[in-house]
Image (cartoon, rainbow, N blue to C red; front, side, top):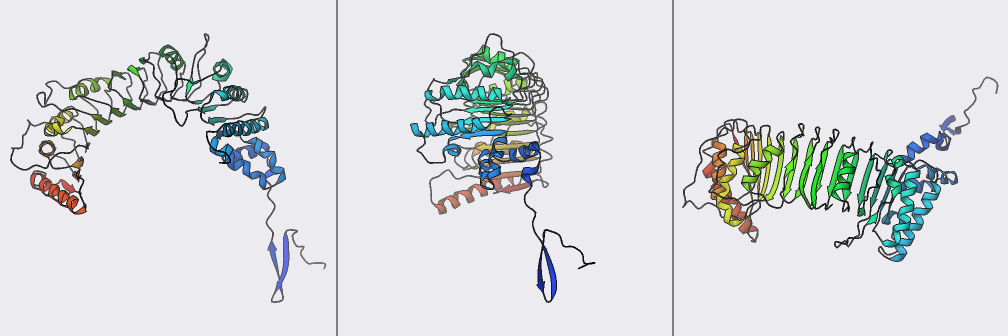
Length: 471
C-alpha cells in the first residue's frame, strides 16, 4: 500500500497477536569477496590441517587452501594414521601428500616451510626437491627435523644441497631449525645476513665451517646448539652484536668463547669446560647443568667467565671437601642477586655441606638463595658439636629456601651460618624430604622428627622479624 514502509529483503514476516514481526536473516558469508591478501592473512592464522578442512564449507573454498603461507608437514598430519608409522607405505603416503600440497603452492610465496619426518635414504631425492621448493618460494622460516625415532648414534645424515646455501636463499632466511643433517659450506659462502634464529640438533659440521657460518650471522638473536659434536673449540671471534639467547647442550667441544656484547641469557648442559663470555656485559641470566663440578673450579672460574651474572642456576654432581673449606681469595660474583644450587652430594660428603658457605662469601649482594638436596643424610642426633665459621656479611639476603631438608648436621651448620650473618632475612623455608622406602606412617614420623630438629636448632637463632616456615 502507498505510504507503507518497504520491508528489507533480508526480513521475514510473521504474525503474533495480530501484529507483524520482522526477523532479520543472517547475511551470507562474504569471505570469498575479500581481497586475496586478506584471505591469505586470515588463513595464515590456521594450521595447514585446519585450513585444508575449510574446503568442506563450500566448493569455492577449494582454491583458497592454496593461499596458506605456512606449510608444516609431519607424519601424523599428512598420513592420519591410515598406515603403520615407519613402514614403506607410510613413507610413500607422506611423500605423495606433501608433493600434492606443494603442487598447489607452486609459484607462491611461502613464509614458513617445515618438515618433520624420520630420515630415510629413500627420502633424499624428495628432500632435495623440497629444499628447492622452499628456495623458490622465498621462504623466511625453514625447519627440517629428520631425527629417527630409534636413533642409536647412526652417523648417516641428510646433506643439505647447495640451493639452501646460495646467496639469494640465505639472504631471505630469518629462522632455521635443522635436525639430523650435515652441513658443508661452499667455497664462496656469503652467510645468513638476515638470520634471527638458528636451532641445530644432531648436526654434522666441522668446527671451521661452524665458526664461518656463525661469523656471518651478524643479526642473529637466538642460537641453540644441541648434540653437535665439533671435537674442537666452539669459538666465534667475530662480534655477534645482536645475540640475546645462547643454548649449548651435550656437545663434544673443548671450549666456549663468544663475542656477544648484548647476550642476556646463557644455558649450558654437559661436561665442565672453559667458558669465556667476559665480553657479554649485559649477561644477567645463566643456567649451568654440569656433569661434575668442584668447589674450587666454580669459585675461581665462573666469577671471571660470567662477571655480570645476576641470576645463576647451578646443577651438578659436586664433591665437597673440607680441607679447603673457604678459599683464601675466592672470586666475586659482584652482581649476583639470585642463586639456585641443585647439587648432587654423595653420602660421604653429607658432613661437608658447610663448605657451601663459600658461595655466600663469593656473592656479597645475594638476595635470594635456593638449595636443593637430593642425597640421603641422617638427621642430627646431637652427639657431635655443631661447627661454625667466621662471620661474613650477608646484608642483602632476604629469602632462603631449602628443598630436601633432612636436618642433617651439615645442613644445620650451613643454615645457622647463614641466618646468623643475614640481618635482613625475611623468610627461611625448610621443605622436609623422606628418602626412606617406608609406608605413610613411617614417612609421617620421619617428617615430624625433621621438623622438630629444625625448629629446635634454628627457631631461637633467627631474628624476630624472620618468618620460619617448615613445610
